Length: 434
Ligand SMILES: Cc1cc2nc3c(=O)[nH]c(=O)nc-3n(C[C@H](O)[C@H](O)[C@H](O)COP(=O)(O)OP(=O)(O)OC[C@H]3O[C@@H](n4cnc5c(N)ncnc54)[C@H](O)[C@@H]3O)c2cc1C
Image (cartoon, rainbow, N blue to C red):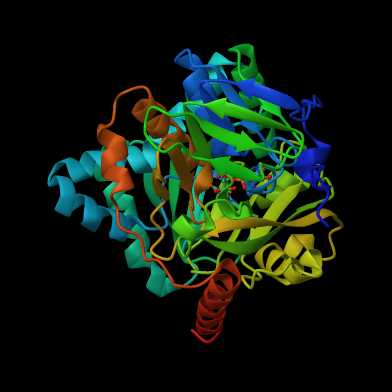
C-alpha cells in the first residue's frame, strides 16, 4: 500500500516548509472544491482565491506528493504535442492560432515568475536551458524550433550553439549542437508548489491532506451543488475541479482512454561541491536532449546533479532507479564515474497519445485538467488560469482548448501504459542503432 506521506527524495528532504494540513472531517460548504494538490490543483486554488472565491483543496496524500514533488524541475516552453495542437487550432481559429500557441508555449513562465515575485517564494529559480542534439540528424528539427521561438518574439533569449560551443557549456562529448534558451527556467518544484499552497491559504483557501476523495456527485442541472466525499467528511460546492492527473481514478467512464500513466525515473547525486558542479555545467543550465526517450538534468542549489530519464514506461515501478539511470549519467559526464547517488525515485506523468493537454467539463460543474505529457510545470499553470477564467465568466480560451480533439484509446490505464511502453522501447532501440 502507498504511504500517504511524501516519498523520500531530494525535494522532500530539502523543502522549506514543513507545515501539514488537517484531514477533512465533517461536512463543509465552499464555492469551489479542487481534488488534488499538485501544480494543477494548487495553481488553480491561487488563481481562484485571488479572484475572491472561497476554495478548498482536498489531497489524498500531502501537497506536492505526486509528479509535482518528483519531477526534473525544468520549466520549458516546448509542448510535447506542438504540431497536433497548432494544426487543430489553425482549423478552429485561423490566424489567432499563432497567438494561442504562443500562450501555450510561454505564458506559464510569466505566471510562475510573477507568482514567485508576488508571494516571495523561495524555490531556487534559475534561468537558462539547453536543448541538445543527440544526433547530427536532429539538428534541423532543433533549428526549426529555435526559429519558431525567435519568430514568436524571443530572439534575444534564444540562440544556436555548435558542437564546440555546447562543449563550453557542458563537460560532455555527447552532443552535436543545441538551442540555448535563456527564457526557460529551472527550479525546486516542491518548494514552488508549497509556496503557492501557502499563498492560496493566505488568501483564504483551505487545504485538507491525507483525505482521498472517494466519490464526486455532480448535480442534475447547472444550478445544483456538487458534493465531494471522503471517508470522514464531505464538501458541497458550486464547482469541482478534478486535478488528480495520472494518479486519480475518478470519472473513469468519462475519462477512459484519455490519459495513461508513464513511470519516469529521477535521481540526485551526493553534493559535488561548487568546483566540480561548475566544471560540468559552468552556467548552471538545465538540459534535455533530442531523443524521444530522453535524458534531462540540471544542478540543484546545493550542487548536486539531478538526472532523469525515460527508463521504464510499463506502468510498474522501476526496481532500481539508480542503477537504471547510472549508465546514462556516466556516459554524459565521465567526470562523475562512480559518483555517490543520495536519492533515486520514480514518479507518474500523465501521457496523452497525441500529447495535447486534456482540459474539459464532465457533466454539470465538474472541470478537469490533466495529461501534460512530461511538460506540466508551465502547462499546469496555464490550464489553471484558463479554468479560473472560465469559472469567473471569461469562457473564450477555455472553449477553444477544451474542444481540441484527443486520440483516445479504448483501453484502461494498465493496457494503455503497456502500449506506451512498447512505443518507447521501439524508440530506445532505434536510438541505439542510429
Ligand atoms: C519523474 C518526472 C519528471 C518530470 N519532469 C518534468 C520537468 O522537468 N518539467 C516539466 O514541465 N514537467 C515534468 N514532469 C511532469 C510534471 O511534473 C507534471 O506534469 C505536473 O507536476 C502535473 O501536476 P498535477 O498537479 O497535474 O499532477 P500531480 O502533481 O501528479 O498531482 C496530482 C495529485 O492528485 C492527488 N490525487 C489523486 N487522486 C486523488 C483523490 N481521489 N483524492 C484526492 N487527491 C487525489 C495525488 O495524490 C497528487 O498529489 C515530470 C514528471 C515526472 C513524473
